[in-house]
Length: 635
Image (cartoon, rainbow, N blue to C red; front, side):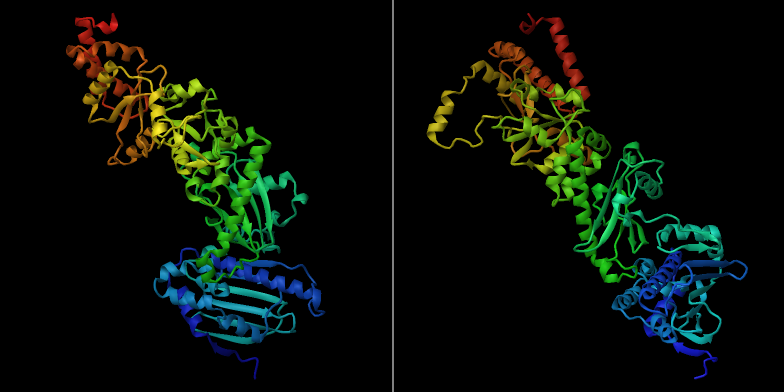
């Protein structure tokens, strides 16, 4: 065969389809072609470095490196390496065929929606062929470390290629891209530096653009922790986050070899931008395969409730040319996420154990995100629950936060429930009449001014065998009270014997209140939970709390609110005086009017919306009546 005459070959059928897609489909992220070609060059250098340890013919005579040489005048970009190079047979084998089924599937699917499917090329890796996204002609000049002379491969991407002998080549491969029209930007040093720093910063070989070294950021996640300084961690954080912070709140350096291998560094910022009104954080984690950036916003590696964490994950088990099936299946992502999530939660638990104040500083910034995991991450729900913090009746302000474990550590031995109460703010909640019996008995109650905290605790429902319950529920059981309803005649009779008698006058007041409020409450009953206040509103069995109903009704005007129970305290001074009027039928209208106002007052205390016009009208009517004729209630 005359090696001076170019040989002509036809691409494998599947490659013809691929090249047609690359040539004629609109593609929004052409820059990944540079990444793919740099990755191939890095692989070639890896192979030569390995061979140099085992073969006499493969010796490193000069530093291994990758070079980019843009020719703006001729619109040519050359990407070169001094790696293993290719022989004649390897050119045909490596470039002329597709050997794995993943690419075949890619082509089959691409026919359905070309624009959408082609946009996945960079993610799934088509290596060398991505060159045709930038070039209408590609030349490959290569000389294998095994040969004295080299070869020139050339194609315009229309279905065929030629190979001819080429003298005077150095060992390695140079890919010359004759750029398409309007792609002059790929000969710009500024544009090329941006692409190289974005995707190939951590390639383990020098990448030079002319005489300039572009990849000067070391991949510190691959280094042993003991050999790294805080300054190195800080510098890498600034590189990843670009948020102006000089130091992260904390970092976590992880490595795993089983059941799969990966290295990672995760950072927690000092500040939660969501709290500052910047909207929902959506940055994700940078994903690398053998130091090459595959995605800079991967959201499969950590759950959504840990979205505030910056970081990088690099896995040798994720080769750059990942098959389409692997990414669609996401199996390895789920496995990595499982490990990373548990390690982050474990790290947070360690901070909370060793330095609670330091943990509270973190929680005040990121607790709003962390608590979302209660409703989404059932596998780690218990671990997340232990990290939650809430204000409580034992504190003096909303800034004093308490864990569920601390709460139970202070509870009575026979306390079977964890109590909370929602409201507008800390001080308003503290004045809620439902708290009176808890305050009298010294029972701690969580104060939930943030509606999301109440949703979280309602979702959690139970912690360490203790039911979590709002104290405005009729299902509240105070310590010492029986959890079971008496079902025997003896128990029922005993209960009746000890039941405090209710006067006929009080029963009449209850009856008048219920007649007035029949459309607004489920019932009006005697209260055993009040010590001073005349009344309170309680949710019937099975209903959600008042505060939670308020939140849900704000988001859904058609949300069906539950009628509550109005509990009346017979020992309150106002109720006693109303009882003295109950025998006088002329005072019944006034008693009903008082019942209406008490219901409104209790509604306001629980933060439930009522009609201001009706309230003020009722109060004004009562004042006018009292001004005209002083009632016995105020004598």
